[in-house]
Length: 336
Image (cartoon, rainbow, N blue to C red):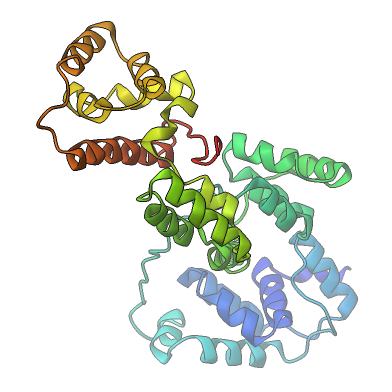
């Protein structure tokens, strides 16, 4: 009789945990439910020596690469050590029925929406270094459109293998799902957050957006000569009222649809004809007639600072709408 056929699922899981070693197993244990941990403990106490060949078969059954090295000895003692070093005495007593169970609410935010905020190529690189079964499980939890973008970044042989496994994927045990989610948080999301400089780029752009065109060009030239990285990312966040003619008609319509005629009239006072026409062609006929009538009366008595503030308000609105994905903006220096 195959010795593996006599092992229960908890015993096989305990074997893999022991093979992982204390550091990794300790991090994993907190993701198990109380009854699952108790079953693992009982399974480990009945576990005997497992040769390396049998251990590899167990790992294959779980469709993941959890361990490497020699076979297992003294599994019960090792499991006790792992538990005692990763759980408090009260938690161990609760697991063994010697005290009140410890109920721990999982407040960790879902990992999948966070993952979908990253570039598909970045996820593709991560999946290329994972077991195809793990990759299939990850893609199955992502939104179909985003998952499709990730699949296209993969090499064809790997792409085919992962898709085949997605088709055959059964219900993944909750403990395995939590393990994969934890790996993603530690190896993908944390690393991405460390590399993310978008907040700093936005802060720099908000300062530069306060400059006029000539000042902006001078500062950007200085930054380029100084070897500042991510200048393209900063340019993508720059926009001024003078850049309105560079916008598409669709974007201009979206921008001025929610702005008051008073604000638009004030911003257009004294503006060049090209900018005025770009704005007026993006609003309704009735509003256009009202604004043109106001403009024909001149700008006497209106402070230049007030006009400048109206233009900055419109530019800020355009930037906010672009950040919210409501319209697309050209780079502020496209016409430089």
